[in-house]
Length: 231
Ligand SMILES: [Zn+2]
Ligand SMILES: [Zn+2]
Image 1 (cartoon, helix red, strand yellow):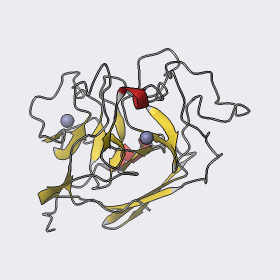
Image 2 (spheres, rainbow, N blue to C red):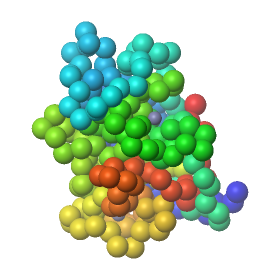
Image 3 (cartoon, rainbow, N blue to C red):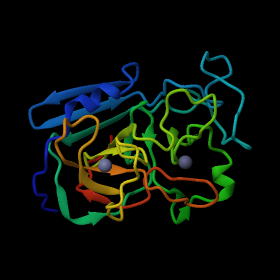
Image 4 (cartoon, helix red, strand yellow):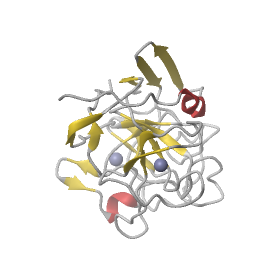
């Protein structure tokens, strides 16, 4: 799939990643993001003995398994330093489709083959929009506005992470606090962010639309660039 070279991703964005879990390597034309997958925030999905374990705040039910109880899963993603838009978009697949600033993998809006997110599944999400599946802890939805959430984006302009096609994803708002009005069907557009010093580059936003109820998914569209494999 031919990809026209795009603008370089602003490197200061990578300062936002959780250094306890995420290692970033810059190698000329490529950037590699490696993560242990373990977040730097509280969740009921930690083992009860862990210092970051908390009682559920919003989760009504929990998926089986706790962090570290399944096969520990690290993730590595190598992307072009200047990712470009592809001629044709690509549907996302199950599993990790991006890596969040906390180090946690970002999943799409499905919980299995042909199984879009539904109320029963959303009830297992912690305040961070995450739960544990066979491959470990991962996020599907935006974090919630609860006192326990001291770091994660909720209806703001914060950096969420990087997607498999190399494009950064930000919260629902622009850096001036407004909602972007020119997003494509995947939540992307050309613009400046708090990391780019006024330079415009293509990036995604969380789309400011309810999936159902009050659930806002992180990324429910197609990749507008060429996705790289998250190993
Ligand atoms: Zn899931
Ligand atoms: Zn923007």
